[in-house]
Length: 49
Image (cartoon, rainbow, N blue to C red; front, side, top):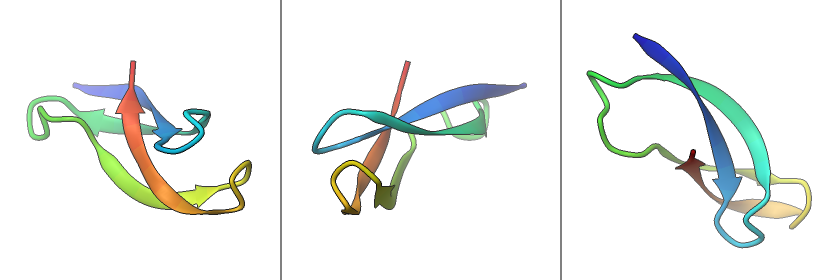
């Protein structure tokens, strides 16, 4: 079952992106390097609740 997850910036903690993930195949939290429009730079975005 795929669930909707929210990705938050690692520096400013703002929630910028939403994506879907399969909880069975990826039980740990997602982590991507994406552009944060508030920080104006590429930062690590981590999965939040």
